[in-house]
Image (cartoon, rainbow, N blue to C red; front, side):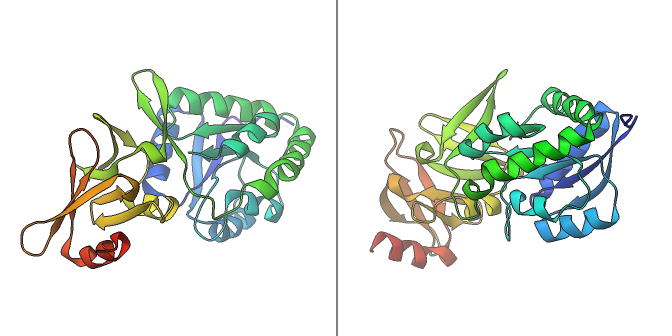
Length: 258
């Protein structure tokens, strides 16, 4: 089998911003064209039944079904590049069985390397099929929907910094960018606040404002603010205060036993 000159790529990710970022990178890198996008497994299965693809960029965890649940539904066997932000068990299995995986937020050069591996894989379709079967056996039972986000990767200069979710004081947004605030610093992350609200452990993290998610394990005090709003003070050295909207104050007070 000859490797296609222009790779046909399908993006499967429930985050529109993540898909847009991958689409921009692919356009800048060249050698690949996006032939379809899906935001969940059902959409992806329907799309792949009608659109031929060489490569799938497949998110691991999405509402309604994880990326692994798509694999048995594939009638064609494109090269699969998984995208993950946290599942350390799956990552170890990917290293053994997947064409490649990308750890969010990934850089263009990392995506380019993954595409090169996919091109090499496409020259041996039988090996590609066997690799996908091995991946299903290796990680199927361990990557289930319902596990919470425990780690996040952020860029720090030329390296990737891994943050433990429990070390994050709160998540906020500024100028359409989402950040994770830690003791004395903050780092931008490749998630929306809506996505974080779904993926973080609700026993620890709560949406207290349209633009803020707070770690209740770090809550120290709740102070009244202006016009029915509140301020949640955290226990860090700076005694950071996170805004609490009037609409969310009652639920927060109940969580705090107030």
